[in-house]
Length: 127
Image (cartoon, rainbow, N blue to C red; front, side):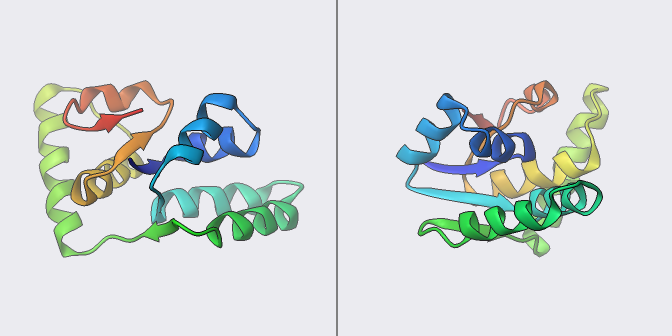
């Protein structure tokens, strides 16, 4: 399984949450959307342990099978389609999470996230 982590999935992994750790140990590859990377670093910037958190993140990103995924032109089309779907459903979700969902769909990944608003996108594979 190829897994993409939402911000709270990464935090759960760092906290040693058993279900998340087990999932990531079994994953063929782990993908961190650029938006998640930005959200993490924003939190580090205003937190008390920014340097330590950045060090841990660097170790995580350096592991074999872990990669950051970035938006491209295809991602913008996925984003637009999801935005339209959510608007028609009357179920908006945060903008950053639309970007995450667009990347997950584009790359055929399984999303690991606690946020319930991803339930409004049944085409997302979740774990």
